[in-house]
Amino acid sequence: MVFPKKIKIGGLTYKIVFCEIDDAFGDTDFTKGVIRIDKNQKEEQKIATLLHEILHCLNSQLSEETTEFLAQGIYQVLIHNKFIKLPKNKEVTNKRIRNKKVDIPTAHEPAPASE
Image 1 (cartoon, rainbow, N blue to C red):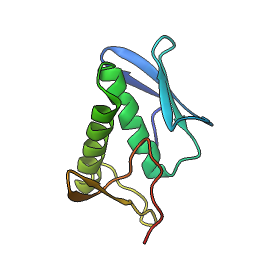
Image 2 (image 1 turned 135 degrees about the vertical axis):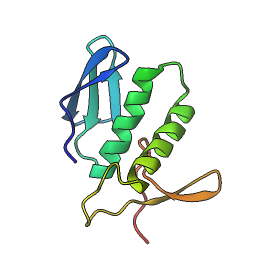
Image 3 (image 1 turned 30 degrees about the vertical axis):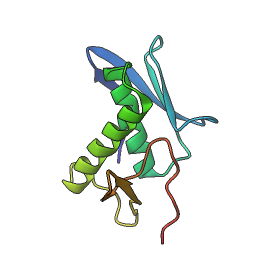
């Protein structure tokens, strides 16, 4: 997937930067208008992390749990309906949300090893 260099969210433009981040998969600097994504993540993890950060930009009052739940759900819809296509050699890990098995990575938790 080709990521944009900038993204407009709620009337503001945010620069998307891929760099090394020691303590998170991604973060947003609202004053500088910068979304940082850890460049060492797998492709599908970068997508999930970007969605997570976009949700923070849309509503910074959401809890981390709600933000993560929504990011995972949106990711699942985009992947399963082929809005986003991963390379054929990429595998999406299995996670459980509300006792239903869905194929999604989480933005704030490393994906478990494939079985």
